[in-house]
Image: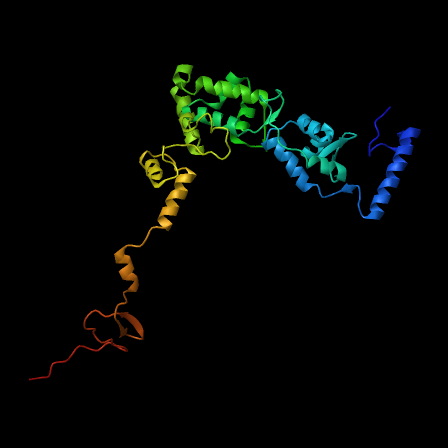
Length: 312
């Protein structure tokens, strides 16, 4: 027997399904008359909540279904924003109020390990590892070949394009092991030519990728962490090290420099100069300029002709 849904046609329903549909319609009318409709179109907030758990927290949909009692298909339809009906995409515009209440009860549960191989995890740590290897001189084509990933997918992952908000757990594990293997090596020892190394480093320098020595194992997956380029990042000293070593300044060092320059107290000479007012005098047609000794009178009109000598 086909499962009854809101898209099932009347002609395809069995007598039992028709009776159930009539009861559902009667119940919805009763709730609307009471002012408590069973369906709600205000689903933007709960959709953000579920998407945040799924993409940023890395919580699998089956774990959310087990915790809330809502079917996994309903959760995935809400995350994607549509469901497929007869080969066509239909936008999810409303949900049962009872379903919304259940979805709000979901709390983040991180898997003990990385979960199933197909679980979705935040991509930030994986992206930082690939960028760090690229900053060392490992080019994307070589890394994709060694990892068994297409160069296009690896480039999309390292750049974060095409709305890539997650990475599969199996891919994250593979890249983490690859990073641990090559983070303390030399690209030339892996058979990369000087041209490949120079090109990869130039691209990384242009995009601001941090090398492996800027990250710790505890901070590389932390969204709030910043790369430690100089050992004093976040201070004016760190900014000066950036300038001296010709490293593009990181954002904490820029902020520290701006903060210090904004709150620097004025010098005594500047304070004295702020209260000093020079003497002013009239000059020409009313313009006031500082007096500088004796001023010559301003002549107006036609210039005077040179003096003529009187005959002796």
